[in-house]
Image 1: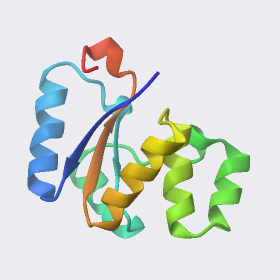
Image 2 (image 1 turned 60 degrees about the vertical axis):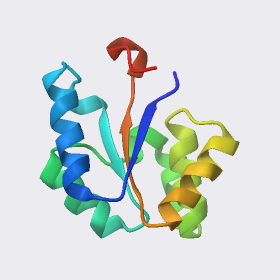
Image 3 (image 1 turned 135 degrees about the vertical axis):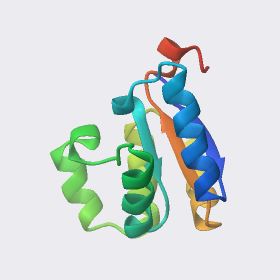
Image 4 (image 1 turned 180 degrees about the horizontal axis):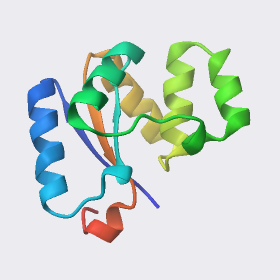
Length: 114
């Protein structure tokens, strides 16, 4: 299933979008945040009460491979593992390079987001 993704430059607007989605019934376990910087991702995720893409989503083998990969490769792999095509993962990784934060909703069809 393809996830729903929104791009944000402003972290407060991302948090507002998370709250809006939760108010519409989107479950917290389907909400993820991703940025180019791990610390920023964790900070935003903690504040907005969302998830980060980790071993559970990518599997242990991919997580180990990501550990030894360049950051861009790691991000593209994470995006690919949650349901994007390689081309889409490349496009969104470029957005992350520009400093954007991604709000990702898995099981988006269940919430009528795609």
